[in-house]
Image 1 (cartoon, rainbow, N blue to C red):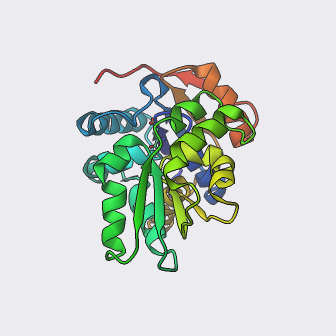
Image 2 (tube, protein in one colour; image 1 turned 90 degrees about the vertical axis):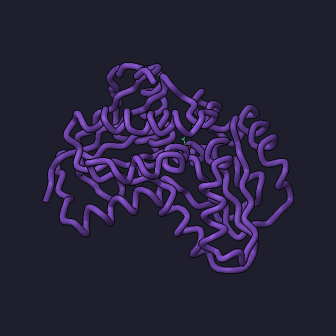
Image 3 (cartoon, helix red, strand yellow; image 1 turned 30 degrees about the vertical axis):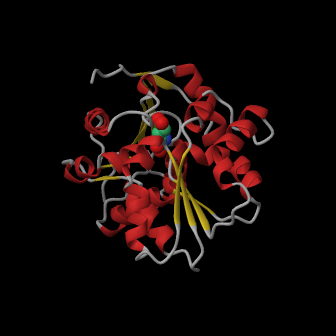
Length: 268
Ligand code: DGL
């Protein structure tokens, strides 16, 4: 048993999809969430920068004596696999559990991955999934650079024309195509899954990398007898706009008022 908090981080509100999944899987645990929105977006950044950011963000959370960390960010998870694996506190990304879930999708039809420009360019998602599937099925990777900044600006409703247009622009290359499953490889994308489904077809199975990562972290804590938080205490730190984060997080988490604390913008 370990009553210390669990740390979760992302470039912004996207990681709240991971936090929300963790709160359902591990009710009672304490959490410290870090939204690095002062440096968002991570998606267009070079890999070397993302690796440094990953360590800085984990160092920030380590100050709160967290027992484990979820990098609730597909971009960091794909760029900084080694940094996450080598971190002195048990740390997990969303990449491997998401790819395992995709590789387990039955059928022989094509699979698609939607993610940030860095995640797609690195090939970490698409290349690794192709290998896992043994070249047996088509893997389509699509960078959606507009999604995360649009969501961060508060546009998430499927009937919001800003969301509809942004989804239509990004998914135009796969218009009319049928996939056995589509991975939301960026944790922000869960907030616009209705709009994505409306474009790709109501029956398309959408897998959430954030939820896959949350399950992997829960399994690790359970297997190692490290669960045990009881206070449901949550702290939120934001390196960007604190009120904007609070406005977004409150309806998303449904835990009452969210009070976030200002964090510094760390220098690279
Ligand atoms: N939420 C992030 C991800 O999962 C990063 C979005 C961004 O900052 O570009 O990739």
